[in-house]
Structure formats: C-alpha cells, structure tokens
Length: 579
Image (cartoon, rainbow, N blue to C red; front, side, top):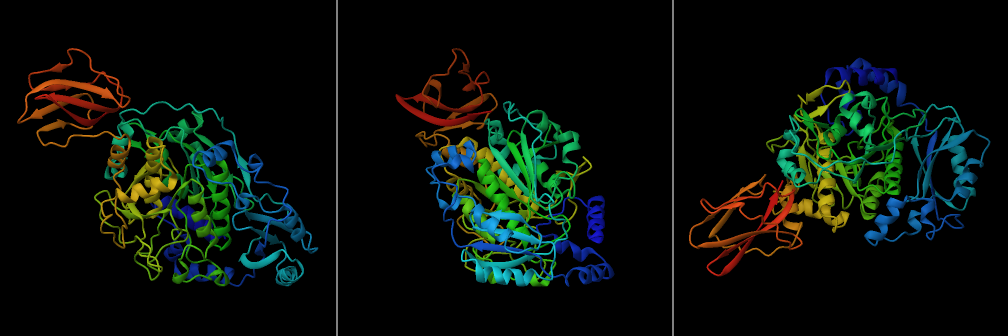
C-alpha cells in the first residue's frame, strides 16, 4: 500500500492532468521490481468483503407513498415534473435483511456499501479464514439471500465509519448573472462546443446541481481559485464512500484537476464550463486500491446523487481490471450495460431524470482498446477524447460496444487540455490526456443547456446533444456522434419562431453584443422592429440609423429577440441573440 501512496505523490509532482479512468493502468509506469513486489503482496489475499443480493423488499418499513423518507424534496419535485414514477426500486434495502445477515455469525462484520436499485449490500468480515464458509451457510439458510459475490479484501477495524458526510456549507445559493467572461486558457476547453455563447446568452448553470464522482479532491478546499464555491454556497456538501478515510479533500488530486474544468471562474486565467452551478462531491473510488467493490461504491454514489435531486452526474473514474485476480470476472463481451453493477446503476440513473456523463476510457493504445465500465451503460453520454482542434487522442478508447451500440456517444477536449492542479497552479496536460478530462466539459455544458431548455427531459437533452454533434449522420468508432455544438442546439430549441428564409436579407452579427447590420439586395426596407419572445415591442425610437441599415440594440438585456423587417408590404422575421 505504501508503494501505491508513493506513486500517487510522485504522479502529482511530475505530471499534468492524466486521464486515469482506471488507475491500474498507471501502475505500468512503475519499475518492474516495484510492480513485482506490489503484485506479490496483493494477489495472494483472500476475500473478506462479499456482495449479498436479496430476493425482494417484502415487509419493508419504507413505502412509495412516503418518498420523503429516502428522497430529497428536490428529487421528488423532479419526479413530479417529468412524471417519473416512484416504485419499489426506489425503496431502500430492507433493514431487517441487513440486520439478519449481520447477526448470522459471531464473526465481527459491518456493511460498507448498499444498493437499493440492485437490492444488495456489501458486508465486511474482519477475519478472512471463515468468510467463505459463513457466506455459503448464509445462502443455504436465509431464503431471501439469492446470490453472493466476493468483491474486495480490506484491512479495516470493525466500527470504522464506512462513509462521512461533510456539510459545512450553507444551502443559501448566492448565484449572480453570467458576465462576458474572459476565459483565459479555458477557452480551449469550451470553444470547440461554442459554449461561451451559451454563457453569453445567460446560461452558466445557475441553480443546476452537478454531482461529481471521483477518487479525491486533494487540496480543493484550500486552493484560492475555488473559494467562491464555499463563499457562495455552491458546494453543497461531500460524501466519502471509501471505508476508513472520511474526507474527500485528502488522498488523491484527480478530482481536483478534472472538476476544475467545470467550476473555475478565474477571470482572465481560467473559466470553466458551468461556473455558476451548484455541486456535490462523492468519492466512489479508492485512492490506493483497484477492487471490484468500487463498482458497488459507484452504484451507491449514483443512488445518492439521485436522492439529492442531481441534474447532472459526471464521472471520471471507471473500471476494467482489478488488483486481485479473483476479482477479474469480466471480459470485453461483458461490456453490455448489464453485467456490471455500476453499469446497471448508470442506466437506471439516466431513467430517473439525470444526465449521466462518463469518461469512455483511455485504452486506445493497449490490448483492451474498448471502454471502461460504466461507459457501456444505456442512455448515458460516454465521452471520447480529442484536442482543441478536434483531433482524436491516440489513447481514446475504441468503439463500438460488443452489442453494436455506438460508443463513445460524443467527444470533448481531454488531450492537451487545461486545468487547475492540486497545488493551485493552472497547467496544460503535456501528454495524451484522457477521457477523465473530456467528460467534465460535456457535463458542465449539459447543465447549462438544460438550464436553457427546461422543457426537455434528461433523456431528451442527451439525445439533442448527440444530434447536434458533427458526426451524427456518420458516427465513427473514436468520437461516436462527434463534437456537440451546444449553442446551435440552444438556438434551434429555445423558442419556436417562424422565420422567412429568403436570401434577400442578411442580419449580422448573430449573436451580437449590441449592433446589428441589415443588408438587403432586392427589397426596400420601410420599417424595422425588435420584439422579445413574448411579443412585446422592444424598439426604442431613434435607435436605428437608416443610413447603412445599422440597428442599435445595446440597451437590451441578454436574451433572444425577433427582428421584424417590413419591406415592399411584407414582413420578414429573423431570430437573433443579444449577449
């Protein structure tokens, strides 16, 4: 374990943001001597953590008629808004069943993970010698236990806290309106999607909740660049699911780097994709081990995000191989969206009214080549990796999935991208980067787009993002449907305004900061008016200069407007955006 800790420290000191969707691949950077010593000390361990799956939720003390006992008001409101039913699937695992398995033997034990959607728990035994016999007896003697699976080996004291809730922040949100940001180097992460124009139209993620799942946010709470999140109450809280750690701000800096691409609001230096959104951080990934149980933690984290009422979940961790050979139970054919508990949870989460964004993986140069789990889930956005010019990173994982589904769904900048690292410095990834960095860009802009288009469901927003990608009509195995244009998607769906498409008129620039030019080659313009989307005339007398057909709308607030042009007795309309 000390070897792995030392490696993580060396990684932070010597590297820019590495896309480490699976940490085990990073161990190949160690010397063969250290790696051999590490393997000898780990692969021989026997399991002492088991996933126990239950048959039902009979006689549960919970009820679908009392969802406030396990879902937040925000989550319940979302279900009502999109007509998403609350079913037995949403009920927590039956506490009577949990008590029964804890009391089944005299071996000290405790629950370290739960999944109500999978109807399972993970139980830890302090001893390893008798674990297998206890589990075998349990499945033979308890009628409600239908399956068991070894998922981890841990050295933990019984009674250690399996997770900690960190909630020092106020729930009072102090969001302010977007500004005309000077993005600094951050423009290289966002311009490829025209996301800056979405911001200028007034959508920077206000009142949207993004839950980030990662391996740790080392130093995040002390970096000056992020203090606005604490001061404004935008960081609503954190949750650490890894046993016996209890603080997401220590242990690993991967989350610090990738999350900075969403949250940063450093004028002139680095502005992220959703600087005004609200956040919740969940550590679902072990900083020092790579074990099958982490897929259970991912599923648990997804359920927590749902219960909080999250709008977007962004995940820059994923799984292929594990440190113990007895945990490597999946082949490429199992990338089917159903084999892994994490993939099943991601699919369910998308059905619960959440936009799910997952890094696709960084196996383009190794023998696996395909995706990490849960990028194989249904109805989520798996994100591939390109640079600011749209060139595919050599490490980006290849599609499609074994069942023929197009993956990745879309792509974003994760190669030679910019981020804020654990020491507070703004750095550019000097290597190949990864989908870990690409996913948060899509997540932040997805939140802004959904803020702008609240009439659509999460599934509809994700489909629109695919449809507004540059390879939608001809998807490929590296970027899927391609690079999304979030701003064009917004323009085409914000309001439904009939426009006369005659080429006689050109109204430009669009979007504009205050001045419009109207060119006309055939018709005589007799009147120009500007209306808001509610049909109210916003034209101020004397603002239009007839010479040169220049229209001054600098006095109008940011938003969408309709320019109506009267010429030769006919009225022509154009939809424009003022930022």
